[in-house]
Image: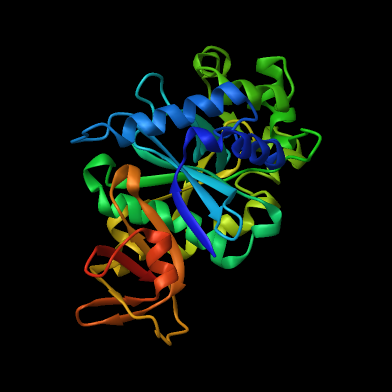
Length: 337
């Protein structure tokens, strides 16, 4: 069984291990002990702060294998990006070039540097050990964040976005970066990705070209990966698309991975989640798995377990009750897995 809960400082060694296994391309989960410690600290501060509107708080959650209490995954939410510095993306748009005299009318795709996502909440850092990348664990970890947002809507914006990892290999080669970013930053993709994760991003604004990049001028290898999801992130992408996230023509400035977005109110987990009382039934026979959440802020916990919706609430067994730290009559949320 699995449990999702807020990250604690005792989780730091496990988070380091996960970051090292995740490899290159997950900028907001760097394999850097100090940065990961800062992320835990920021999450703990946010959970213990009264918030009436999003202001740049960051939340970090871990996936625990309850059979041995080992952390096997992590994910997070930024309540608002671009608070201190603009959040940069490339917007793909067409530029029209026409000559009535020659009767030529061309629409040419171009990349425009923008910060359209500044001021919006972002889902980040979904990382799971390969041995635990099964549908239950992946869905639980990804969707637990949405149950947290549903429980604390004032802490987040009405729209969410997610950057999906783009194409790069295990050695740090990115076709898109090699064709574009490398010429302006004078460093390889691996170093740029690392610096973006552990330092402020002023260097992006200082070094990125301000003019549109015409896609046909890039090498074919770079063109072919624009908006393409890394194979290791395909399961994550499938979960998000099933939720209702959509690609709207924005890509990452480093690896050209796609960005997907959605209104919170339109997401499947948000619209289908229900709340009511925990009904403790030791002999619950249901085989239907549900995502079940309990607790507020620092006590927030989510698990996946067989449960049976009833008029008065949700029937769960004793083991589920113990994982969630609830008693009969406690207020819980649930949604079918």
